[in-house]
Length: 395
Image 1 (cartoon, rainbow, N blue to C red):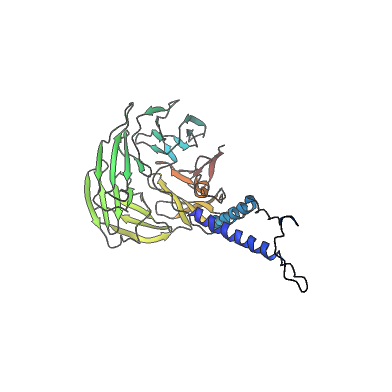
Image 2 (cartoon, helix red, strand yellow):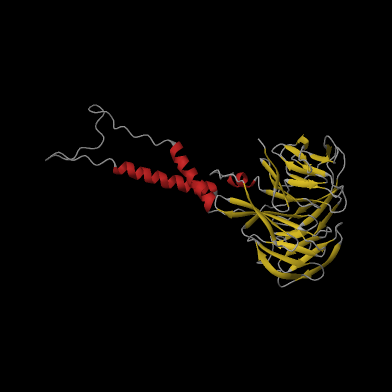
């Protein structure tokens, strides 16, 4: 896509420069009563007409980059932060951040650094049911418990690109992997046991969902899986047991959310779509919208919920730049605070999306009113009222 647009820009600028050069070389007037001489004189009577060298690629490239930057800054929408591969996670008394090549852990009381462990190509960090952490890289899986001075390596499952990663809601030694199904096959949920081993672990169980591809996976506060497709809700218990699903005329393709998040009450789910529309749904054998939909003051890039369902945090795109803001809402989805976030300008190249979004991930502490926003280059921690408690830039 970008290479095509860049080629069009280069072609338009090249044609414009060629046209200008041709117009700047008027035809030589013919002598009276004589035919007009040819443009190129014979070699033995005059030197060959020198051909102007094409302009340097640098000015042309800079014009294309400037055009791309402006396009990215003001015209292009950002896709939401999917799939579920968290870059930040709150554990018991700690916050984990994936740096560019390391797992970094901070104490949430005084924000001192507890751990800085090398991790190649970090992919995701997850809080386990017992308050510990696992961090997944391209070739490593690290396990850290509060109080440990170093993380311990565990066996790394074979994980395809683009899968969603979840910690089990009840068992601290189990990891879940969701595969959307690709162009063929049904969506699947696969569990792996975490263990110290030199052997790549095999799946403990693989559950094939009965609903078609293209749905949205969510999880309730008690760990019930929800798989939402147009008109249908499929449910699985925390351990994978099938539960009664539900159908609803409200669950149409237009109403399908981007995120299905835990709510304060165990039998409810908070749904948010790409346009920033928020709805609360009763889940279970009956699927029903509760109350009227609300709208966020911007397009959500990343969302998270915590504090036992009492705190919803959204990183929103609220203007050109792109401009990012953090918005916080309470258990009743009423606004608590809005905070402007630092941002990175587009690059004008194919990596612009990664550049402007890599430090806009969000996490909320499971049982406390703490919010973290950041990525490999920055980290900020806020309280439930939007007051900044800690910030750090990484280099």
